[in-house]
Image (cartoon, rainbow, N blue to C red; front, side, top):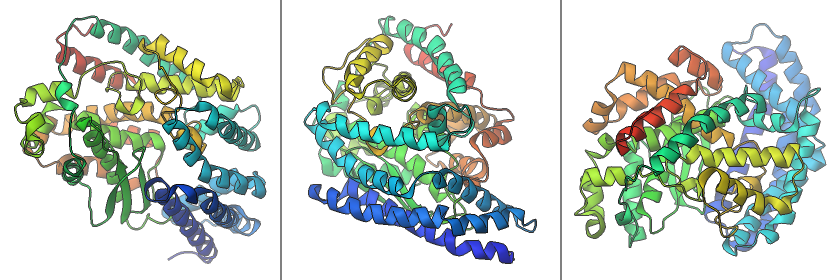
Length: 501
């Protein structure tokens, strides 16, 4: 039974969660169905709701109740975790002037539309003034929240992955750079060619939607609790564990949508796996962006790009696209979806080069936040880094600096989570293989053992454990990126028939 002090906190928690849910719905609608001219008007309503959320989550009254709760020794483990999460959030918000919080919320609600139009028109200058405002707000907020001597970018990073700062991420990306860049060079110079031309062609959108729903359900997506829609940039939103929403996009590259759906379904499984007693509370969501990415990239890459995954379902894909894939053997298809080819677009990157795309964004964010890189110089800096790390140079902003939605939303510090998630996934995979015959499970066509392993060790804890605690409790050791490096080098050495050393 809850203590009387905790009962005083519940109305504030419920109001904050309800407002956050409403804001999530607005965000979902804006990216999927809202008409183009709605944003400036909707943003004002988002501003009002954001102000109400600010008061419910960080106002003087709720902070006083939280202080009482922290002194109460009779709280349950769950109640203590909720109080801690709410206290941490209140402390981050309370140092921001309420009017600035609302101003930024309104800016972010309209800026994604400005970004989308700029990307469509290949016009970075049309987005640059808005990006400058967003960055200024984020740096100002970080300055309010920073502890003594704490760097602004470290504050931003902590919002997405606790326990990882620039020092630890520099070591992590240094490990990737040291091992993967020379291996990529060796692989691309091996002379081995992979035919993937059949993945591009005339794939009717209606058929792509049918196969997308098939693969979402195959992974474990529950359409009784979830929705699949279309958006410019695939993403996952959740209102609670019985309402999880994913999107994809359809084009003439059939594998793009298939793997984006598998990816987003991995995110969705995490949210579906949150227990009822945690959902609609501050601890009722994935513990971090990095751990969330580990679940999506596990399903997309470690499971979904494994040839064994396709043995039970490749026939279904061939039936859906008989003209394009009917005569393509499974082995040829599996090699094609694992082809390594340095490209310009992060979301279309192969598994080996993907984290190099993330590393570029990490380095640029550090320059923007810590070195005051001028926004106007971004396209050139971006192009230079792509040339340095991947040997290719974007010819325009749409395939360069404008390709991602994240900065238009103010999500500085988010990108490293993608690479960390890939590394978390590889470490979990190493442990999983010790407990089951992974490829036999894939060949069986029933992914239940894999889902249950992830639910038991990751999903059910919500935010009760940090990413590092989950890794340590599951695998027996702290975060270790060596598993990720070995996984990539072993996999692609086999696929390309080259020496791993």
